[in-house]
Length: 115
Image (cartoon, rainbow, N blue to C red; front, side, top):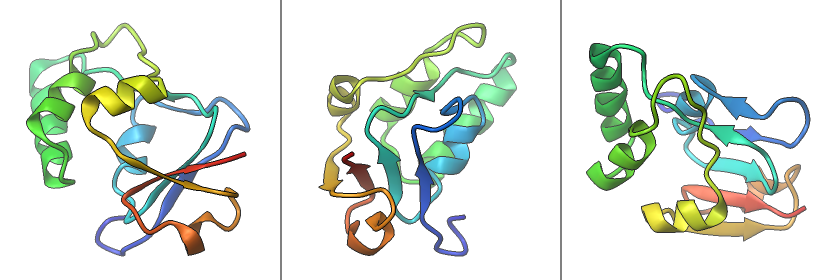
């Protein structure tokens, strides 16, 4: 995703985006999430896996604080951050008016599509 410069998006349909899916989602040039879409994070079940995830997230440009926040969740738990959690991690969102036109109007790294 990142090497090809593709945008990624997640919508409310289905089960949301959890486990390995957010790692792919975060690799997008622009990450577009429809408001209300569950995005679930957890650490790996082995320390080496969590270390690989940390290095990958750092390569995507996340800060150590953001990485620690995301990978502090035990692997047998799924954490679905709220917009307040995202703000506490330092993620800044651009609000766009539609999920379907978001790839044209999203200029920030992270965009929240409403509705």
